[in-house]
Image (cartoon, rainbow, N blue to C red; front, top):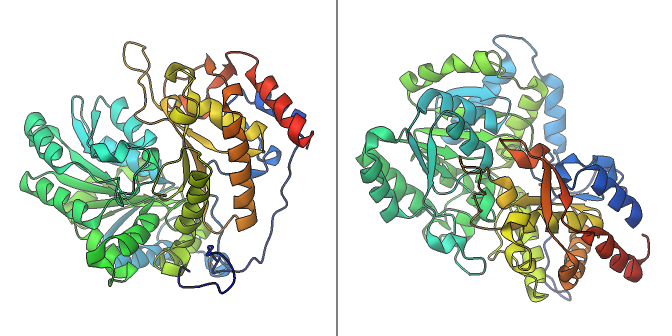
Length: 481
């Protein structure tokens, strides 16, 4: 993808695929978008998809399938037990990751449930480079807690550091000694830190971290949901591995870990998930949890058609031309926004472009959810649905006080092979307009606040009539389009 040069044009990303099936989009009038936002309780998760122009909420389960993935779905074996579809998927995973045993699950958070149920006991400490919402929720509901040890530089909004997802190795060893190895059931490494801008972790850092874990006899777990983006960054940014193929890098990473799990809604371009294990005893210690929570061991709560598509998707995730589009579109978006002066996480990571709401909406207190307000403003002023990744996505402290997020981000996800460059330009344009009118944005407060994962189903309301003022300013410039 990046090898295509232009003669009389600025360098831009080029899609290495052609479009064969399209889906019509709908851009509501501005007044109607305000109404829909009010009905959704100022929570973009509650918007109807038909009311959204560009859905950049997530890359989970909304990636475009290839023609080969679609055709593979036709040969699915729907047997309850012993499905040949499962064995084809397992064989492909073993080929890529070199891990013999596979526990299927319906998606990544189901894998996290199995791992937490199997290993976490009250008082345990699970060490991570950075948490993901569901991974942390499963641990804390069982009485465990999480220590996040991403290097301090990973939380710096604007920089040129290539691997801001790296775990702090000195703090890792200190934490193990403080907690004692017996109280650390496993160390979880996330490849592509979701909540701090999709920032990658280097192979060198993963190797050093797993070496420390082995020294103390602690299990290592890789969350490979965003692995394909991380593979791209290792290939282009880590000098020692530039001559390695994507498959070689993948195997080198897998060889470091005891357990690898993933959401197929991200890795594999379909809907499902799996836990991969190399040790037979470890496999048997978890296998009873699959039929308890998911389904039989040869379907794990997944549609077999999705499993067939995902098996092809694994191969496509090993293709540099396929996995490069997301990061290159994101980098293009980030670069353009940065040139406009919009505070955005740099360098561009995987998953999506991330706006720094703490700077854009610095006038909004953290307890009024600046990232949540900004994500609502983008829908009102463009029909764009992003996702809040800040304090709203945290859970309250045991005493009821807010646990303020380290970063207040708005994620504009780039699902794989979905958006065109002209749509990306539209997003850049509307983000710039909102940034230039940021003083009109106000805060949010909860009307209905669930105790767990509140950002999914909570209902909020604005702290003033700022949405009406913002819409009025937008209509003055663009009309009721």
